[in-house]
Image 1 (cartoon, helix red, strand yellow):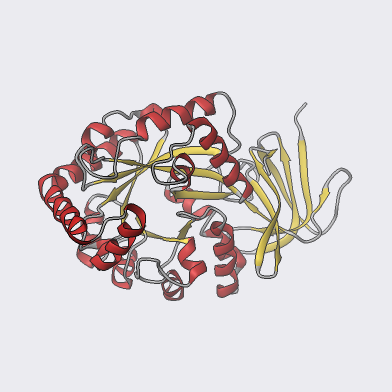
Image 2 (image 1 turned 90 degrees about the horizontal axis):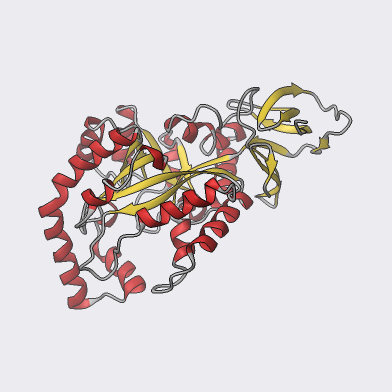
Amino acid sequence: MTEELILANATLILPDETINGSVRVEGDSITEIDTGAAVPSGAIDCEGDYVSPGLVELHTDNLERHIQPRPKVDWPHAAAILAHDAELASTGITTVFDAMRVGSIPTGPRYNKYARGLSRELWQLREQDALKISHFLHLRAELCSETLVEELDEFGLEDRVGLVSLMDHTPGQRQFRDISKLESYLKGKLGLEGKEFQQHVADLKAMRDRNGEKHEVETVKAAKRFGAMLASHDDTTREQVHVSAGHGIRLAEFPTTVEAARACHDHGIKVMMGAPNVIRGGSHSGNVAAKELADLGHLDILSSDYVPAALLLSAARLGEMWGNMARGLRTVTMSPAQVVGLEDRGELRAGARADVIRFRMREGAPALNGVWSRGRRVA
């Protein structure tokens, strides 16, 4: 017998409006959206709480934080994956593109290969139905590296690679145009400073000169082979956006300037910004503030980046800022789902996948009262 769930007397967050109504779920699908405050027998009375599609996360480093909770501390991978999955579910995220770096520097102080092995362990747990939410891979292709091409070659169609981003963290441009910001970051993370830091910068620039062009070409080819969406990362100038558009890119992660964000929209490229940027009121790297782009109409999608709980909070804050909760929540539901071609989720409608969350605003923060993935309660 198919299980039925009815969330009634709720404030339903639809793509363009909020309405009082109910959501009926049968099995793993939404079967009916109704209006009004009626609470049928057997339904859950939401007492006016918001009911929204489950959140869709396209870029999170959270799994990396679980497998290495401190520098040089490697946590058991199965335990880390399960904890990561449960944490995301607890924050309302029901679909995640787990960001894993490909492109390593075995001769350097930090970047060792890990994505192929970790993703196999992730898929083993998925095959055992041990995961609460839906997982895809986001391969972060580091152009300034030694092993990118061979690492990309280890993945295939069976690996659920839904997103590939062109990452270039060469010092002196994009995210780290201000090298002093990079120095502060690496001093805290790796203890690099002074001559050691300067040598590190010189080595990375030389590596980019040797490998960058080839790596960019091969990454574009790999994304097509996987059938994955290709994204840019940290675009700073109109010229960089023009190159991205030439690759067929339709998603820009964290553009660092108004100039780049405006150019993205001129080219029909969706702009994704970090949820922590919204919460903090600015970028930790000194780049453009997400709220500035939101004010200008150049922000389409949010990503939790390094704080999973920030995703719902930041979308609610945008909803309050815009005076339109539906628009705010769309940045973390329908818009990310659409840009990666997931047409079965991101919207409360009959026939959609039953990924649903319930929450109430308390002291300016959303407090979750339930999370359902494929119709099963997971938090």
